[in-house]
Every structure is written in structure tokens, then in C-alpha cells.
Amino acid sequence: MQTLDFDQTVESIIESDDRFAAESYYFLRDALEVTHRELKKRHGQDHQAQHVSGRQLLEGIRQHALEEFGPMSLTVLTEWGITRCEDFGEIVFNMVEHKLLSKTDEDSREDFRSIYTFREAFEGPFLPQKPRSIESGFSKGLKKPGTKV
Image (tube, rainbow, N blue to C red):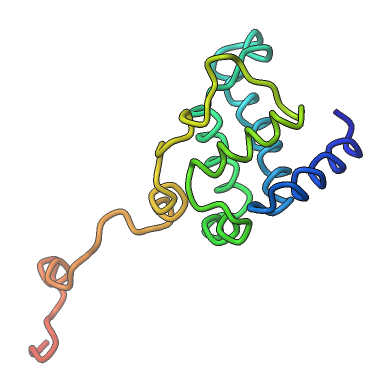
């Protein structure tokens, strides 16, 4: 689909459903491309024509958001009105209804239900792996405050 057509269609979607910012539709389109590329890498050239499941798309969305926005991913998505996986399902089905995407008979909004929490997906990668306690530092030879050197 040409960009102008995509732009006009997104405007039309926003007029009828303004829950999500226009940027979310462009982001989802880009995330779908990322998902296709990743699946093609993993499964070979034949994957280009294969269908992307809701779960696969959500993983591509997560990967794309982390690459694009890093630790600000959760903030950006929230600003766009997206706070859970189901919101991406709503965006996908808005795009399907406006012929920007296609679906199979098996596809449903349920495919996007609670695949991951946004905190674990978009904050987790930036949190320390293992909290360090003060006591663990002392066991490694550090002196406790108030002790003589």
C-alpha cells in the first residue's frame, strides 16, 4: 500500500477510534516488517509469504520497541494509549477492518491477550539482573562503615 493511502487510512481510523495515537499504527506497520525479517532469518526465504501469529507479532513489537526507544519504550507506548498486549490486538483489527492488514479465519483479538506484561517486556531488560545487598559487598572484603582499616 502506498504511503499516502496508508496515511489517509490511518486518519480515517483515528476519526472513528481515537484510543490510540496515529504513531502507533506506523509503529505497528514497522514492527510487522521487523517480525517478517526475523522469521525469514530463522525459517528461510519461504517465510515471506507465511502468516504472522499474534504471539509472533507481539514479540516483534517488543523487539522493535526496545531497539527504537530503549528504556523509554513503556513511556512512549503509554503516551500513544497502549498499555497492554490487547491494545496491539485492537490496533491490528482496526487495520484489518480498514484493509491495511489481512487476517485468517483463525485470527482473533484473543491472540493478543496477556502474552506479556508491559513491565516485564519493556522495563525488565533495563533492570539490574541481581540486586546486590550491602552485606554481599562486605563478604567480598569491603569494610563495614565504622570499622577500622
